[in-house]
Length: 504
Image (cartoon, rainbow, N blue to C red):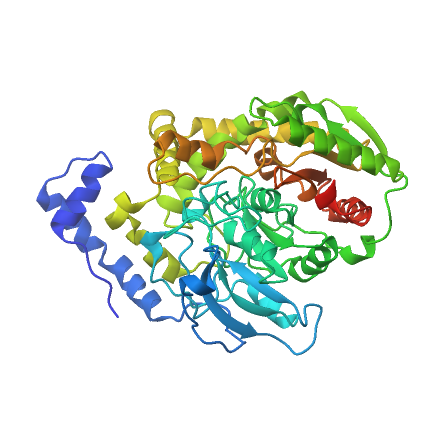
């Protein structure tokens, strides 16, 4: 099929936008000499797309009615059975709705993408099914994953099952809520600023952001290549470790993966913390919006680990306080350049593309007023940084990120883990229709200070529930060396087995 050739008017517009001046005769000269180039596009259009085959049968499923979706945590229900045997045999799984499942609608929390149906399974979906897992559907997520609260998803906010009317956290909001509601055994989350760990903390489950590149992101809608992570969420540490064994490892399709080192993570279970060295990071506590009960319960959790045999020492990492500063231009300018202006992928990317997603997502421009307020403010700031400063602050932040990583690595050279609150506060009330827009922004971005820096540096970090206060969970975060998820699981499991965290 021949591609449409540009008209003289269209080419004149392109030339003017590039800052050049030509009369129509010169424009036509260039057009005439471009025909051979366009002939090659015609030939390319005739070739089949090189995308992986879909191997497990499924039906498209259905959008759940309110009575079967009390927390608005499901976007779509579609049961897909995998292999009869395997590590995940008997386990049910919810897939965050930014992950492609062939033949099953994907909305990514956004009205502008509604109606898109992927034609490919993400690598992690294939691995889940190959390992015997049963997928029950797509979990609701926030509007293009741009909120740490659960109030921006289309069409309705996700409720926290532990305390209805309160946030389930974002952006993997449905994943956290479905686990607490016991509707699935396992869930997939995604994390660019904390979006696995934030809902895990607000809901009181275990959520691991793996080392950057450990789990392939292939077939997951990108936000920004250098901070894109996907990983496991669960109600127990054992299930989390088992799930990571299935998800982790190179797939040959994701350029985020640079020689990822996997391990038998379940072997860490039951090893205890005797001899482990844990650093309590002073700058992770006492933020301007830190709640006293959160800081106190996380320090009590550190003391519990010490009583179990770990050596626990308080350390200072002054640069941690600037981690959110480094993250900001990377996240905002990066998402605007890649996810929005680049229609999800952009270019200069040596990975698996989804042309159908590019086509569907490009339609946001015709519905731009529908975008969430949290996405809009992120886009505005990112585009301003690109327009006014040519992306120099994005570049500077990426350079400084190496120093931030080195600051953590220096402490991790002497300790096995870093410990701090996952979030400075507990789950907040969901904003209502009459609330000020400032509250909408605050509930989306107020909790990022401890989680976002580790998206920039790529260290593995896990949200571990460690107490309750006012009916809401408190969570500590354990962070390890690159590709040392084993140490995180070792400590998390020892803490989990030491007592009922809900009574702590």
